[in-house]
Length: 466
Ligand SMILES: Cc1cc2nc3c(=O)[nH]c(=O)nc-3n(C[C@H](O)[C@H](O)[C@H](O)COP(=O)(O)OP(=O)(O)OC[C@H]3O[C@@H](n4cnc5c(N)ncnc54)[C@H](O)[C@@H]3O)c2cc1C
Image (cartoon, rainbow, N blue to C red; front, side, top):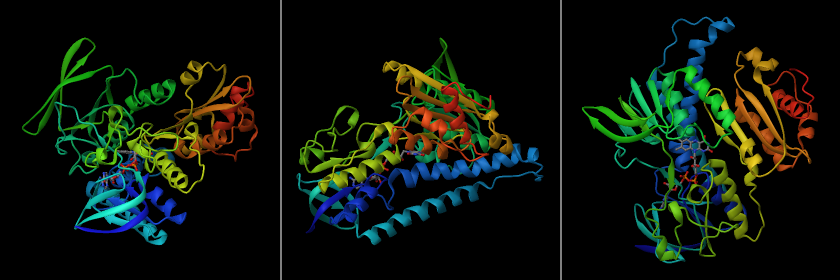
């Protein structure tokens, strides 16, 4: 074992929380190291999360467009087909380019990348087991070890037939049939990928609603659209038993007072993720683990130890890459005595199905439960000229404002390019804009974002186009 270097900051984990924290700390002049136990930088998001899933979603969306929409535009293509190997290898290339990019950013910013698994020896020192074992000291630590998929107790992941999202991103061939357990964001996104490739998909969800973090009216519309696309849903359904026999997975599901049996080539279990702190030996550092495995932190991301911070999926809150990054920047700045603020109200949430769903701020239900009197306006994409030109008219925009002050409380979009349009709501919430200011701002014509203006006008009783 070698013992040397003392750092100002050691970041453990190189996901969007950790790598961003490390770069920001280095920018602020702190001697910084980032420890990563995986072979590449980027964590869940870049390696087995946001990026590979979006690469597959994008490619399969192009494919489906050729199959189903091209003819309407006069585009004639003979029998489009999907080269599954190419689809997968392109996804790998996208991932590789981005993870290599982080290594480049580390070099540029003089962040030391140390490969290996870190565990605390004391509150000031960690041991890193990699090619060699070394002890490292730091004045501050930022824990960013992320999360892992939750298995069902009676259906452990083998990543071949019973897969987590990680396995679903690297299936060797398109399965004929797939059951997805859990209709959250990851479940509906990956179900969309394989449905577009021809897999027959059944989705089993315990709640009566899909994508529960979203505005219930928007989730309901998404459900209708996904059903129309060919996904079969069992809502209010509980999986009670599961087994694998001769390459076929079987489930017993309680649904509408009956027990039904379902079977498929592959089962994707996407019932949620849990914080990951295995192997960190937190007790040696005197750090408590809270309920459900999250590390409790104060408003400045400090754990029970003043010099040890925790961010991202490891702490309670929506498990989103950009949230982790904001917290990483904030933790690094707090270490240097700055006073940053993460505005959770303006952190957007996106589902990359087609149409996409994007939201920022309060849902109508949350706002009413919080006691606000509301102005609510909607605009259907059917009435939007650009959506008509694109032939992509499903969905709507919903603007939620506080009645007396007029302040914008939330923006919800289900429709084409919702993920890009939601940025407008983020800025509006950040700047505490009113619904009227949103309605009065000029929006280029013809654009999809005119629907945001129109929904805001509708909330004020002044809609022009419907
Ligand atoms: C399929 C899927 C799709 C997703 N899509 C999106 C999306 O579109 N948008 C979005 O915002 N979010 C998405 N997410 C969520 C997003 O990936 C996470 O919120 C994000 O990665 C959390 O970042 P993090 O830095 O907290 O942790 P992680 O990205 O999980 O990184 C933690 C890192 O810590 C390392 N580590 C753990 N323990 C140790 C140790 N002891 N020593 C050294 N290293 C260690 C791990 O190897 C890992 O690399 C998706 C997730 C999945 C699974």
